[in-house]
Amino acid sequence: MPYLEESYDVVVVGAGHAGCEAALACARLGLETILFTVSIDSIALMPCNPNIGGSSKGHLVRELDALGGEMGKNIDKTFIQSKMLNQSKGPAVHSLRAQADKQEYSRQMRRTLENADHLTIRQGEVSEILVEEGRIQGVKTYSGALYRAKAVILCTGTYLRARCIYGDVSNYTGPNGLQAANHLTDSLKANGIEMFRFKTGTPARVDKRSIDFTKMEEQRGDARVVPFSFSTDPESVQKEQVSCWLTYTNEETHAIIRKNLDRSPLFSGVIEGTGPRYCPSIEDKVVKFPDKERHQIFVEPEGLYTNEMYLAGMSSSLPEDVQYAMYRTVPGLENVKIVRNAYAIEYDCINSLQLKATLEFKKIKGLFSGGQFNGSSGYEEAAVQGFMAGVNAAMEILGRDPVVLDRSQAYIGVLIDDLVTKENHEPYRMMTSRAEYRLLLRQDNADLRLRKIGHAIGLVSDAEYEALLKKEQAIKDEIHRLENTNVGAGEQVQMFLEKFGSTALKSGTTLAELIKRPELDYEKLAPLDTARLDLPDDVREQVNFEIKYEGYIRRQMQQVVQFKKTEGKHLPENFDYAQVKSLRREAMQKLNKIQPATIGQASRISGVSPADISVLLVYFSRERQERREEQ
Image (cartoon, rainbow, N blue to C red; front, side, top):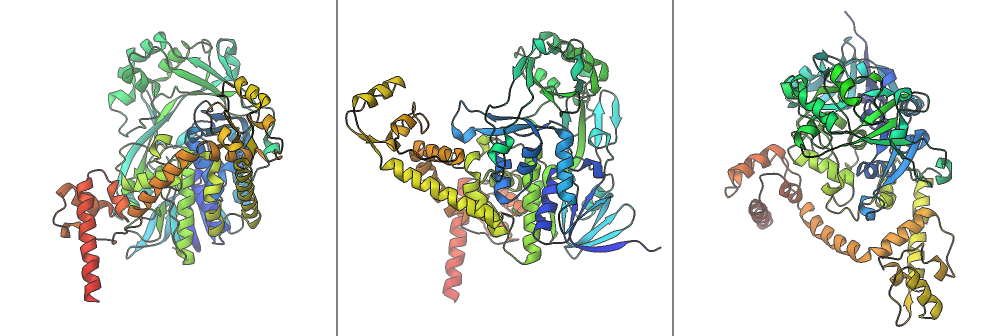
C-alpha cells in the first residue's frame, strides 16, 4: 500500500516555544522546513503560567531577541502587564517579566509562522525517526507518511507519553487535555537514546467573578514599560495595563494539605517522574518548609477576554475536593469557583548528556533537540534551546561553522553548557546564580553582546545591525564626554551633593567620577550637566551602568580571559580516556560518557577533579609535543 512521501531540508517535531523558534530560524535562513504539531491550535501554547520572562528568564528572552528570535517581539505585541523585577538590587539581576494574553500570544505566533516563507505547518503525530548508519534520514508519522530531511529537530515538550494526574484521576493526555504523543519514545529508545521520566505541574484556573480582590494586595505594572525586543519602538508599548493580585496561604490551608497527603499522588507513589526543585507544588512546600507560616499566591489574569485567573504559587496534584477546600482558606478565595483543576503532568524526555554543545545528538548525525524534551523547564529555556538547535541544524546543512555560545557570552551559553555537561536528574531551571559572569551578562546589554552574532548568522537585519552600531557609538561618545566634563567645588555643587547625602568636594572632579558614587547616578546628576545630550533611554542606562560598575566589570573581564584559556584548549572527539593512565576511575568514566569538547567543559563535569584536569593537561601537552617531534 503506497504512503505519502515528501522531502524537506528540516523537520521540526513539536510547535511549542522551542519548535516555533527552531522552525522560524531554519525557514528564515532559506531552508525548506516542515513543522509538526499534534494540534494546530496548540502552537505556542502557554499551558502553565501566563507570563514570559522573570528572574533570569527575562535575560534569556532578551538574548534570544538579540540573536534574531521571535519570543520577545511576540510578547511585546500581546502583553497585558509588564514589570522590571529586582529593581532595588544591582543591574545584574534586573529581569523583565510580562503577563501575556495567553490566547493572543498563541494566535500572534501562529500568524507569524503561517506567513513565514519556506515554512510548512502540518498537523500530525511523528511516530518514528529514520536513521541509517548513524545519520538521520527523516521521520515517519503515525499515518505512515514519510518525510525525508537533512536534519530533524525534536521539540516535543511535555507531550511524549504524557499523563495528567490529580488525586485518583489519571488521564493519558498532554497539557490542557490535548492529545499526547505516545509512539515516538519507542523509536528513540530503539535508536539508543536514553530517556528520563520528568514531572511538572500547574495550579487551578479560577473564575474571576468568584474572587474578593479587596482582601488582596494589588500588583500594578511599571509606569514606564521597557519592551522585550530591541526592535520594538518603546513608545508603542506604553499602554493601559491590567493588575495582578497578591494573597497568602495560612495555617488552615497547610493543615488541610497535611491531612490529605496520603491522597496526593506526589506522596503516594502514583507519580513516577521527578519534579522541578525550584518550582514545587504547594504540598511540596508545606512538607519541606514546615515552619513557614504562609506562602505567597499571585492571582494573575490569563487574558483580556476571559475571566480565568491563574493562582501562581499553588500548583498541586491533590484531589478535586481537597483543591476546593484548600483554595477556599486563602483570603479573597473563600467563595472561589474552579474553572480548571490543578494537575501534575508526567512526560518522557532525554538525558541531555547525549547532546553536543550544538544540541545535536552525539550518536546520530543531523538529529537535534531543544526545549523541555532536553530535561529543562520553562517557556524561555525552551525557546532559546529551540532557536540554537534550529540555527545549528541550518549551519550544518549550509556547510557553515556551528554557533556555540560560551558561559562568558550569554545565559544561553550557561544553560546549554549545564545541560550537556552536568547530570540533571530533575527539570533544569535557569537562575541568575548559575551565571559566573552575571554582571557582564545583564539583560540590558544583550544586544551589545549578541546582536553582531545574530547578524553574522543571518537572522538580524542590516537595519537592526546599523541601529546597534549607532547605539554603541552613542554610548562610547557619551562616556568619553562625561569622563572629560569637569565639575568645580563651588557652593552650588556642594549644596547639590548635600541634598543626596554625598560627600562634599575638596577640589574639582568629573561627572564620570560622581556617577560612581553609590548615592548618585547619571539621571540624578542632570542639573549639574549643562551640556547634557538628549539620548534614548537605553543609551543613558548603558552609560550609567558602564561608568558606575567600571571596576567590577573590569575584574570580571579579567576572569573571562582566564576562562577563555581553558575553553580554547580543545579535546579530541570520541577519545578513549582509559588511555590516560593517571586519571581516577570515576573521572575516566564521566569523561568517556560526556566526551567534553574542551578542557574548560571537562572541568565542569561532576566527578572530574582539579587533579584530573592537571593530568589531562599534562597528557595532551606531551602528546602534542610528540606529534611535533615526529613531524
